[in-house]
Image 1 (cartoon, rainbow, N blue to C red):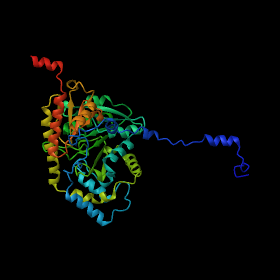
Image 2: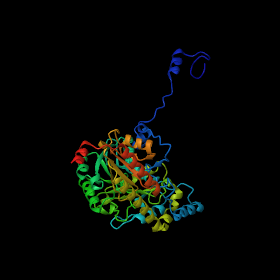
Image 3: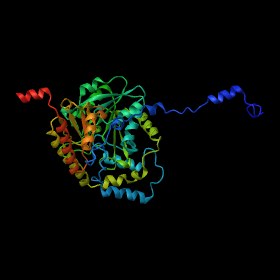
Image 4: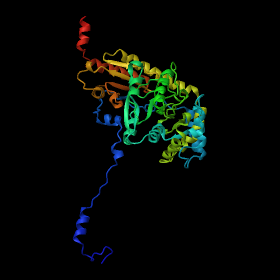
Length: 437
C-alpha cells in the first residue's frame, strides 16, 4: 500500500471520481471586478478611425509632455542627475518618505494659518496614490463620498472598488463651474465620509475664489465632514486669477490636501505626490495619521531618487519657468475659447487655470448625433481631432479640450472643429423662427 492506503496500482473508485471532479477555479476578485475607469470604458468603446488625409491631433490626454513643446526646466533635470550621481537614494526609504524630503515639502507648502512640519507630510507614488490613501483611510464599505460633477474620474474608480458609494454634486457652467452649494448639502447623510474638492478643476479649468471656498468649507463644517482637497493644479493658475489653498481658510474642518510634481513641474511620469495633513482642532488625532502610515506601507513608498531631488527642485527652479508655463496655457486657452465661441452650436467656458477647457454642445443643433460620445467619435473620423467626451466625467453634452498642444496645432484643431460643426449644424425650429422674425 502507498501512503494514502490504496493498494499500489489500484485506485479506490470513490477517490478516482473525486479527483476527476477537481478543476482550476481561479477567479478575479470582487475588488478587481468593481474597478472601472470611466474614461477607459468610454474611449475603448469608441470607433476611433482618423481621416487618413489629415494628421491626428489629440486633445484628449492630460499629459503636458506628449508633444514635446513643454519640457521641464533644466534645474529640475539637474536635481535628478545629482540625486542619481550621489548614490544615496538607491535603497528603501521609510514608507512615508525620507525625513529630509518631507521637510522640503512642508517648508515649500507652509502658509500663515496653515503651518506644516515633516510629520504632516506623506510622500506617495504620484498624486493619484495620495488620493487613494486618503479615500482608503477615511472610508469604509457602505460609506459615501461627495464628488464634483463634472470631475476627475479616478475618484469614482477608487471609491467603487472599495464598496464606497459616490454621490455627485453639481458644478455650474454658467457660474464658471462653481459648486451648487444647495445641491451639495442635500446629498449629505450620516454615512458621508468626506467631501472631495478639486481646485483648480480637471476637467473644467476653473479656479475658485476665496469666498466660494469659504462657503464650501462652511457646508463641511456644519455637517462635520472632512475635506479631501485635490490641489495638483494649485500653481497652474492664470495671472489675472489667484489660487487659494483650502487649508488656511479652515478654522475647524480637517483637510487632507493632495498634490505632486506632475503638473507644475511637467513631470507626470516621475510619480511623486504628497498628502499634506491639516488637522484642525486635532479632529484626525493619531488614528488617521497612523492609518495613512499603515496604508503607505503597502507599497513601501514613493520613488527614492525623486525624493532625493525634491529639495533642490523646490529651491532652484526659476520663477520664470512657472510663468512661462502658465502664460503658454493661458494663450492657448484664449485661442481655443475665441475660435470656438463663434461656432454655432458650441458654447466654450473660459478656464482660469489647469490645462483644460470645457465646450458645451447644443445637441438639438446636431440631430444626426445621439450624444457627445457620438459627436466626438465622428469628429475623429472626419477631422482627425480627438477631444474627450464629457460623458467620461459624467457630464454629457460637453467635450474637454487639453490646451497644452503647440499653438499651431491648437489653431488647426479649432479650424477643423469649426468645419465639422458647419457641416453638421442644423438650426432648431426656434432658431428658424428667430431668423424669420
